[in-house]
Image 1 (tube, rainbow, N blue to C red):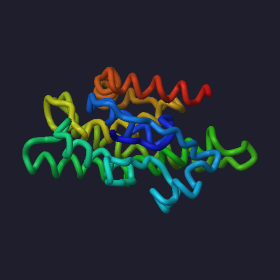
Image 2: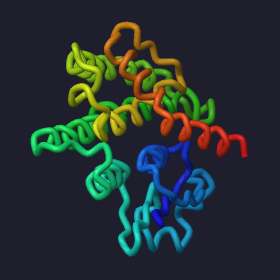
Image 3: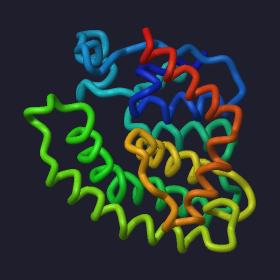
Image 4: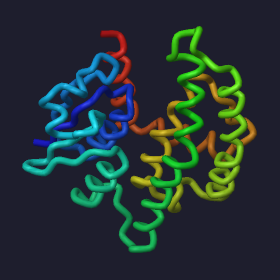
Length: 207
C-alpha cells in the first residue's frame, strides 16, 4: 500500500490530493513539520533533508512533492498525459510553479501569518505581491480559451500548479485581475479528491 508522510495542510497536501485522485487505498502518516517530527531519525532515514512529503511505494522511497506527483501519475497512468509533448508540458508547469510562484507565496505567508509579529517584514509582503503579478499574467494567458492547462482534461499539471496556488487563499489573494486563473482554480477545487484533501487538512489543523 502507498504510504504518504506529512501534514496535509503543508506541501504534503499535494501528494495527498494525488493519492486521493488515484482512487486506491493509501496510508497517510501524519508528520508535523512545525514540531520537529520530520527530523526524527526514522524520517531522516527516508528523507535526509528532513522535509515532507515523502512516499513509500512498496520498496521505493521518493521525496519532493512535484517528483512524487509526476511519478504517481505516470506509474498509475492516472492524470498522466498520453503524448510526449503533453508529458513535457506537465513537467514544465510543475517546475514553473515551484520557481516562479511558490517563493513569493511563501514569503507572503511567512511575513503576514506564520512568523511572530515582531519578526514580520511588511516590505517582504509588498514585494511578494508585486512579484506574483508576472506569473499570474503568464498563467492567465495560458488558460485563455482552455478549461485546463493541457486542454479539456484535468491532468497532473493542473493538480501541481493548483496545489501551490492554493496557498494564496490563506491571505485572500485577489484573482479578479486574472479571471481565467480564478475560474480554473474553481474547477480544480471542485474535484472530490481536492475536497477530501481540504477536509483532511482542516482536521489536521484542528487537532
